[in-house]
Length: 227
Image 1 (cartoon, one colour):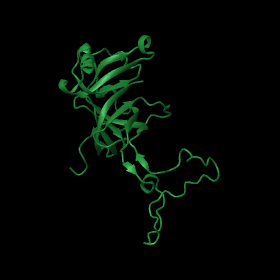
Image 2: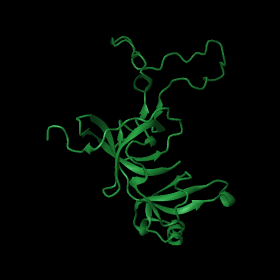
Image 3: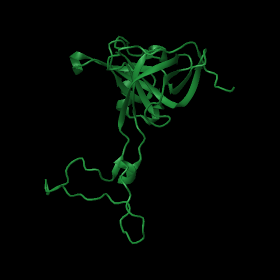
Image 4: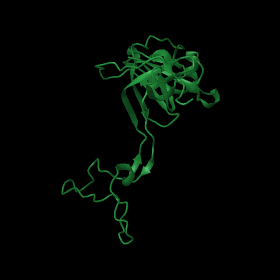
């Protein structure tokens, strides 16, 4: 098991030498610096605390500054906890880079989907809109809240109503790594990943068993079609 933090940049397409086209998501993967470690003796489990993207010291609190000074690393914008026996051997101050995964590997990508704010039932749950005549007086309502004689003292949990829609954590499982580049700091994965552009995502070893390893034809030609 292993994992790494990156930032979704957007989507594009790449072509293999034989002309096979892959729609890919571009994930920027800057070095993940190990800031601290969780131990079984102290915390009951093993994990790495990694920092992602630099941040000015003046924008941090004193407890946060103390954590980075103790580790002897530059201050970071984000802190994340990563689990995995393949990466736990990293010492404080070492880094995880994009070459942690290789082309052909299968990964799970975890991110947060796009938030839509406070949304009505028509948009949120695709309910049918009411009559559009001027005399209707009912256009975008939620419909009946009756419970058919059950639990009349309340609304049964799960009733589709208007409210805050997202953002929620979403995991896309078993997608293929098309290419990794540690020097330029990116990973290309086949298909889409959750979240808007510039959102933080986590790539990890898949939790479901792979019965057959997907085939990715190499080498990859990063020149877009038509250029």
